[in-house]
Length: 493
Image (cartoon, rainbow, N blue to C red; front, side):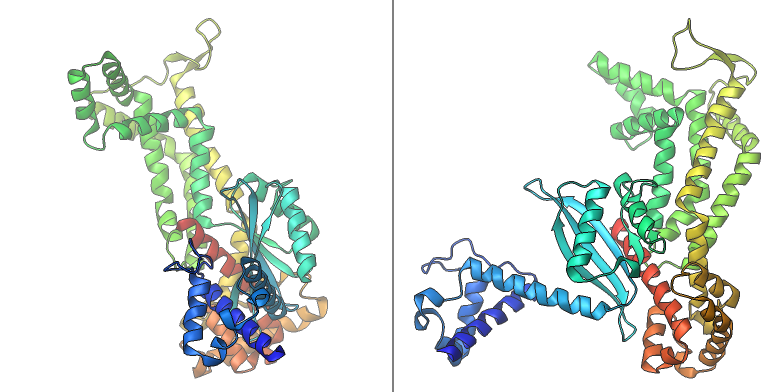
């Protein structure tokens, strides 16, 4: 009897494991005995029993009616047992190693908030691993609620927040807020849990912020949206045809208003300004959208964009003004005298203040827009993150470790003072140099062009035991770098 039960239970567990591995649903629409398709669980069990005589003898009519082990409740119990074992294997694999955290929240069809948690780490074989840990119900998506849920999850699985070396979320304020966001709440407890955010999304947020925060640019993009919605062809001609042929006066009015706006000096000015700014950021944008990002190149382009924007802030006014005036002259659009006065916008005529065209276009549009982009670029692409990635890039094995820089790598250790004590610093420089000369002259490492493969080869050759401080730095670099790449892939989908 006990043997039959064990065989039956093992069979149900085998079916459960197969369906979970393949990501298939268990239940069927009609699970009655007369149904032609009773669902994946029962159909797979039937197929299994037809090909295994021992199984056939202990299930269905050959099993007690109250011990069939096929009810939905039993299926859920088996699923939970598998999930528990998988989670335990993940936790044991992490051990006391460094790991990073990725979190995202979503609302299901029943309007309940859930939080998905993914962990990334380097296992004992040197492989970079990412594992989905849990989907947890949260009462709300406030930062304090998410933080409490993460704390509970860590305690439940015996994970220590002190071993966290990276955290990545979307750009929502409840996640990345500087004071009360989830990022900040974790950093208050562990300052070495470096925050990572998709670089491509960062750049997008910079440009979106300009479109929202400056009234003139916001108005410009509002009109652009209206124009594009009407037609993507030769817009002036299309709008002219709509104006001439429209049977409704409302359509005529809209078309006439858009034509007038497109032929205004301010529209042309903002158009050329944003075209120039988007041109400055274009190469960076294209580089950040590539799946196999070159960190060194990306960091170099970020610095170049910051420098170009600052130079444009100082010397770009005359360039834009000349481009706008030339365009207006060629298209017979009246050119404004910068010394003439105009009323400030947003006030009635009686309360309006007179300002010069020069002040409006130079200060309220040009300077405000460029300053805003520079400010947002500095906030989103901080010196700390660019400096950290610049140091990590020095570990890259491409071209026989051509990017190796011992001083930058020593600086990399400064970002993780918890993991490198004063004694470690005494040996770090010499160990780094020994590591460099040893691997550069070893043909086994000559064709490696990926940091993850390098870590695997170090473990295979047991050089991670010869250079323990260096390997510790590589682990930290991989945890941070993988999180950045995964976030970029996620936001670019």
